[in-house]
Image (cartoon, rainbow, N blue to C red; front, side, top):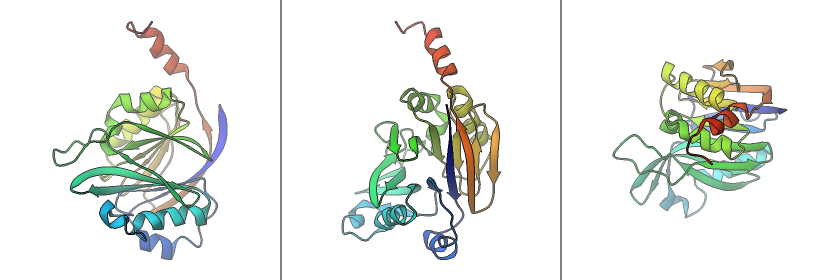
Length: 224
């Protein structure tokens, strides 16, 4: 399956810097991915008063007419999590939490999340969930068309390898946004775009394949 998509990845900036310096010149995009550190921390107790960061994020999705996914450290009455906030059409769609936080001081999320946006079905991978193969596998099996992964760390060989493996093993492209780098791996595990630029826009043709998903099902001795 093939179709075109435009993604814009942002990192190494504060939300205010992005809005003031880059927003006006930003061209049309289907998905805006904000890396960890852009939105900052989100306190849900404060957000309930209205006019907080999530409200600003929702307004951004309305102004740009696109889906927005932003990595954030969230706090719900003392339960801290690594999360990705998602908005579209001026509304907060959901806050997706990492299932495998990798830190005893962090709470775990409940499950892996797939979101049907106007630009397609996006499977969200939060931080260390990228190192868990079952995460990408579950999202691909639920018919995700692209993985959007956010890592709360600088780019590393392990992160690049994990993103490429998720794409190759599941026949889906993977967009990875780190604190200082962003890249896109196609469904063959090949890096199509990569940049340390704080704001980088890509227009590309997405390809997906269920070949490896079918092979894995056939080789599973426990599946009838």
